[in-house]
Length: 252
Ligand SMILES: Nc1ncnc2c1ncn2[C@@H]1O[C@H](COP(=O)(O)OP(=O)(O)O)[C@@H](O)[C@H]1O
Ligand SMILES: [Mg+2]
Image (cartoon, rainbow, N blue to C red):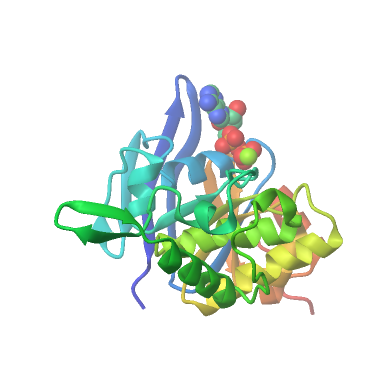
């Protein structure tokens, strides 16, 4: 299968600091790939480059086989790469459907050259995106501030579906959440995968990574130190691998 995302010898320097030292990485469609590493390993930098927030110093990035050079996060977004930020970047006072369609409203023509917002279409499509994520939200006119943390995550992810995301990037999505909300976010990642969407997940939670990711890449000092299937790991062996940068040998 052709990778959705392919990185070749990606380098990122901040002045004298070399945060990424030549990273090779591929992500397949419908794959949940976790990135683990100690503080300073380069995880956030990697995500900032892939999401269009920072340009790489050198190296190549391909999306669906085509070389890309993002000029901004919006450029990545319109090309199917969506980043879900920890604060979710939702407008609390706006309704569910307004949040999902911010920046990509549906309009219809009432007279030649005269367009109005097609609110009925946006309400209906908002419900459909939420259903694809197995959400039972029925009132898409309510402001998002009235919803639970897990529901707000679903609304942010529904917005990614609106942009036809092929790759969703999440940096520590469960770091500030309790047990129930964490379970909801992990379920949302599974629903994205079921839609054929690839997920790049940065997490310090070994349990979350093993539960939801297909594979894990271990970054160490700006390099890929190891990569493998999470099925071979326990939380303890993954934590050990993050520290040492060495993939655990199979138990005897
Ligand atoms: N904006 C920046 N300016 C200078 N150095 C930075 C910047 N962002 C990150 N770094 C440095 O790059 C390295 C990797 O950081 P980061 O990507 O944040 O790692 P992680 O997310 O794995 O903790 C660290 O040495 C960090 O201090
Ligand atoms: Mg970080």
